[in-house]
Image (tube, rainbow over all chains, first blue to last red; front, side, top):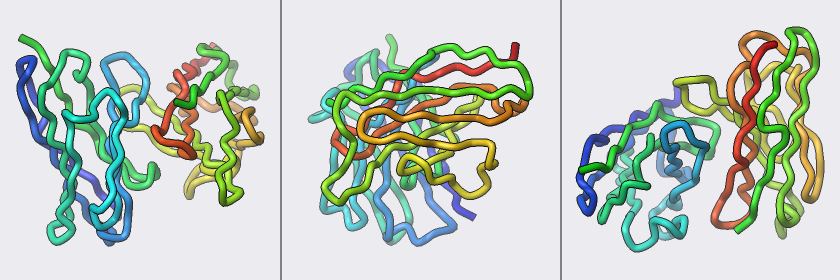
Length: 113
Length: 112
């Protein structure tokens, strides 16, 4: 069974940093592009970033470029999202997803003073 | 960026009746390989999204056959042949043809 479990969310001050993790199991992690998608409270879905199977290629939505970094550890089936210079508008539930067919339960990030 | 526009944004439906959601993209979603990468998702309150349909009309495993997707180019439709109580929630279309990938605003389906 495919499982994706996010962690690392919490309350952070504007300008601060946070690192999200997504532990994957039930499939060959190194075979898939992986994605981060977020959802602000009461709002719609926004694709944030993704990373190729071997980590050689990454893509970001413009609003997070230069601030967020997606990475992966294929040996440990772990996807990460390093978020720096956080802003209030980054407040959201962050989901990791495999190919958009499988999603985690999400982790909430709140950026507030 | 490709803009995805859904309509209606609110869809009250009587149980057992059909429902239809439209999604239009600001440019053709046909990729260079000939495929059109248009997905549909359903999200119940407090839950993660669930993909229903990929590449316009392909149902994911476990998705009831009352859900169907159609369309081409820039115009796409999700249809539910007979709405059931478990179908309430928000429906999103999403294009994965062009970076950055983009979602529609969502259509909130509820029961009349």
